[in-house]
Amino acid sequence: MTAAISLHGVSAGYKSPVLRDIDLEVGSEVVAVVGRSGSGKTTLLRLIAGLIEPTSGTVDLLGVAPKVARRRKRVGFVAQDARLHPWRTVRENVTLPLEVNRSARTNGHVSPDEWVARMGLTDAIDAYPHQLSGGMRQRVALARSLVIDPEVLLMDEPLASLDELTREDLRDELLRLWEARPRSVVYVTHDIEEAVLLADRVVAIGGRRPARMTGQVRIPFGRPRSRALRREALFHDLVEEVRSLLE
Amino acid sequence: MTARRTLVDLVVALLAIGGIAVILELWTRAFSVPSYLLPAPSAVAARMATDAGLLAREGGITLSEAAAGFVLGTGVAFALATVMAWSRPFERTLFPLAILVKLTPIVAVAPLFTLWFGFGTAPKVAIAALITFFPMLVNSFVGLRSADLQEVAFLETLGASGREIFRHLRVPSALPYLFSGARISLNLALIGAVIAEWTGADRGLGRIIFVANANLDLTILFGAVLVLAAIGIAANAIVGAAERRLLHWHPIAVAT
Image (cartoon, rainbow over all chains, first blue to last red):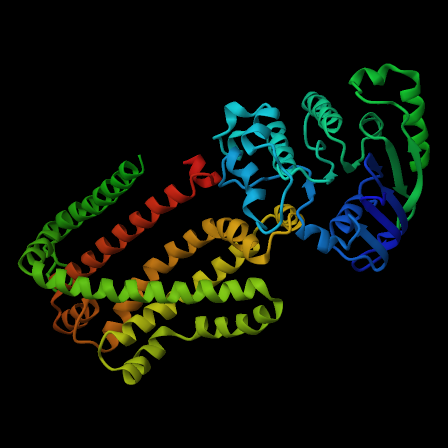
């Protein structure tokens, strides 16, 4: 089986090069991408989504060019601090993905209302985004990305703007989601512990600009996982190993 | 709720105007100001009552010219802003032309329009359209470009077409800007219609003001100005009500 996402010798950058010689294959697994702020993590996600073109190398998404894959509506995207559509209620925000690009068939068999319920937002289903807390908004952002049941889920620091306790809750939520249905997930974060807790593999990018992959660490923990992993010695060794890749 | 807000706005506006009228009344009486300099509000009111039919008829004409000009001007502006938001080359080509239109003094083109289109309704509508065009163009353009880039990226990864992104994201994002453009343009449309009537017309409030000015007939002049103000306040109240209804999700509406 071919990887859902594959990058070969990819370099990118608008005016000055940002990323150089990236080789990455993502199958049915969670790959966390860690790096310092401004190291090109977001650029990597935008490359995979086909929102920008590489200056060299090739990007394949579900076996085709990202722009083609996008039209099949198999890609979910969760941004940091999603602003949602402020004129739509929670339910309407979650329904939005079903209203665009209707020609694409989605394999979503879970209704928007059910996603809202799974995210614990049923009481707020008719609320508008400005009435929600940051954590609730990110839950809506998750629900609306999952409503099309995407094979590929791209997440750009989805928890970065939340407080620590809310972040903990949402990490549990993410672990449950990935246990319920395996997907190809690229999870960008600057939080190394978060990366080790959530991912099957952590990829580090960094170095002087343009950034390149400085190494990767397999995370041997099975699933289901819980935050209790943090108490294990191996967890801390893995965190240290990833950290050493970033220095 | 919304209707009540509109009503309150109207009452406050009337009270403010009433207060000024009382002060002016006292002023004109206390200093026996001659009516060809400043007529007493009571005299203006009496004149408005006598000529109510005339004022209503001519006010209606001015209103319809302004409304037609507003619809035409803002409509064309929104269409052009859409094209400009769509493509940089169009933006670069059209924006200087829009500034040219903006900088052309209305008083300079108004007589010209009368020459081209005659004394009828057409030149008034054209002037009102011309004067409303620029504020609406700028606001629409900025509004359509104000869409959140993360949200654009989200819709793009879903394979949404440019048209879908326009309808679902760009237009709603632009709404607050469209309303502020409409508020500015609304009043300008009325001014435009009056100026156009002033420079050559046989009907409308502008014509009444023009003739009254020549005859030093200040009671009807002020009467016409008040009718114009009333039309303006009512139009603003209607736009305000629509704004509160459609922008209930917006921080401005939430705050008030």
